[in-house]
Length: 145
Image (cartoon, rainbow, N blue to C red; front, top):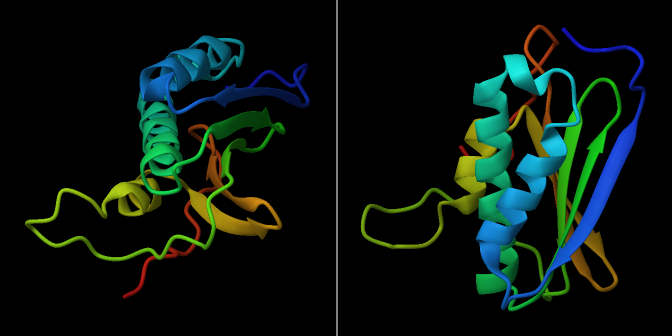
């Protein structure tokens, strides 16, 4: 279902705290339309957009930082990366039933085929990978058992 003529492509945009999650989600949707497999994979597109929302929210709310969103298609996987300049690394956890927070990384874990946290000198980047339908998928979870 993928078009072999598109080998690799990427887009990047910064979303300040004041601009919000909605702008990041719309920006991602606009760029996903350029990928040939997205028309036949609405569930994957929805998963990508929810992941964008969760990761930008984490950058704004928990890291008190702008969010740099990068989408990269490498002919195998759509990488969704969000960088923030907040100190420390997020700690994936199982959310309780009463807390309004703590579900972002659990949602990313449930939606993405794989994901990882990359510490950097000026914060961290979380990258989630989404494979289009018909490709090998699902790697081990990062959430504690």
